[in-house]
Length: 237
Image (cartoon, rainbow, N blue to C red):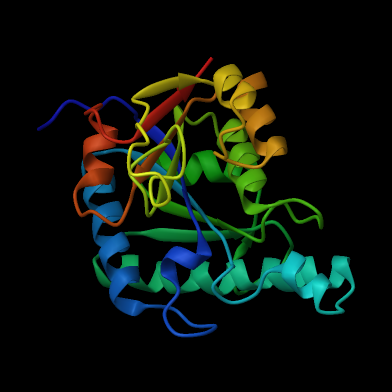
């Protein structure tokens, strides 16, 4: 078995990465992600997930369309629960034990989140899916991922995206842009590199939670990151 660099991880996936047609879920992509997650869980990696809800509803966009911001963000939180349930179904179809924990009480859809409960489930070999964001408006699911990663004492926050790391500039606009293998939080801030929103970024920096940005769409990449291979970009103090 390959050596494991990270034994407890918080994997952050965007809702858009799961999106199919408008306001829907791409079940093929969902199954591909679930297969990768199941693979690392089978290696003994304690795995927690936070999934955004942007494929269904974004609170900020809703407020621009006339929704009250608080209500819009609450709708976005519910969208993350829909994605969490979809991922739970995909993982369980592969034989992986899962638990959905929600920031706002909504039994029997999911159990109310607590850090102690989450850690206990991880130690019992469940993949846990943490839904509902932080439970508060005005905070992104990136912030929820940083907060939950710190609370469950994760070794790393893995930000699964559709690009293979952090670049000096947008590689789609500037083909000459270079990818960083490693970079510090301070360098990212000084160079205004858009890794996560500032709140989540500050939480990771202040609590020494490293972040790896990598391409989740390429099958096998999650396992490579877990095993410490040079995949994506590592952000650290």
